[in-house]
Image (cartoon, rainbow, N blue to C red):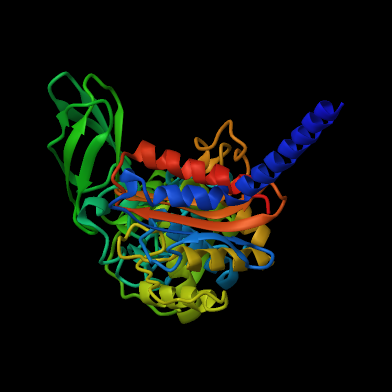
Amino acid sequence: MFAVLYHMKYGILVAFFFGIAELVNAQNTVGQLLAQWEMEPALKTATWSFNMVRVEDGNTIASRNPDTCLPLASGMKAITTLAAYEVLGKDFRWETTLKTDGILTDSILNGNLILHGYGDPTLGSSRITGSDRFDTLFRSWAATLYASGIRVIQGRILTDLSSMDNDPVPGSWNWDDIGQYYGAGCYATNIFENTYTLYYSSTSSKTRIDSIFPTIDGMEVTNDVTVSGSRDNAFIYGAPGDLHRRVTGYIPANRKAFEVDGSMPDPPAFAVQELKKALTDAGIEIRQSSMTEKAQTKVLISHQSPVLDSVIWHTNRKSINLYAESILKTMAWKQTGTGSYTSGFKAVRSVLSKTGANMDGFNMEDGSGLSRLNAVSSAQMTAFLSYAYRQPFGTSYLESLSVSGVSGTLKNITGGTVAEGKVFAKSGSMQKVRSYSGFVQASDGKLYAFCIIVNNYNCSSSVIRKKLEDLMVAMVRYAP
């Protein structure tokens, strides 16, 4: 009898202590994992910063090097879009107008036709539902002008670019990036996301450019692409305003219609080119007479972009650099009358100053994160995120972020784990840089803000990704 009771008590005792150990383990999983990282050979050369805080009270749950400021690549978009919700408002729309400084007499417009842009990054792109591609859009504009009685434009087709400065890209962007589609500059008039596509074919030994869409008048492309490997490793080089492009690197053998995307040399000029075509096709003659531009103008067509809330959703879910840069410069335009990087940074800092974050070491060089001179700490980012969630736009902001195992740039991470559908974050990725910034719905039912930035890791992309995935699982499992 005594032996039976002893074993029963022993079993209860073991179960009790096992339960305590399991709870302690659940509480310390994040910290233990971070401690392991400090001994990891793969992270021996790395610099990293991590912070996790409870949103409702700001209490820190776990951290390592939280004040270390580092580049976080596209994680910068989470900062730019946060500020935009406050500065511009979720219902903000960009306007693009077609105006004239002339008078219509007997079907002849005696003056110039002026395309006036205010930085709309979606103009002429069909990415967002309800938006038309540039050719469809300009045909509809031309039809409207024809229906209004215009048959001849005596003057020229001009662009008014005064809403933005003359710096389409930041000075700290790499030469390797500027010619690529993701390095497209931001202008007062953006069109078709300021990109074009080279369509390649390849044999076992050489490559050829078969076509370019859209066709850009005057652009010359030197093809130095070779055949090798099984993926796209072609790079386009060329500066804004330079109509010469050189393509190097390699693409796989025996391909047809292989796509390589680049940034347009001069988007406003391309917009004028395509508008002229649409007008001519509609039966409107453009005489191109040199006429003095007049200060007084009349708006003939006003085009509205999708709402900012939708643009931010695509900016964060699809990580579109142009959208982020345009949003940044548009904040500057709204506050100063001219869109510039310097004024855009001031607008963002003004919002961030309300978050309570210690801004020591913070540096912003662009809106998208392409510059390697951006620097943010995980402690700063979690303060920004917590502030954002408490604002009236908090739900919209959270919903713009990718969802682990479900959508966006997190679709292929944490699938089949307890973290699937529980992490809402903006990812950041460039060579030797990985970051995630966002929110975690933990097992205690509470929402936590987190940020992890890793630079200069000594392992493959797949290995660092698995480590970050393990961290997400650990955060979701957290239960105080």
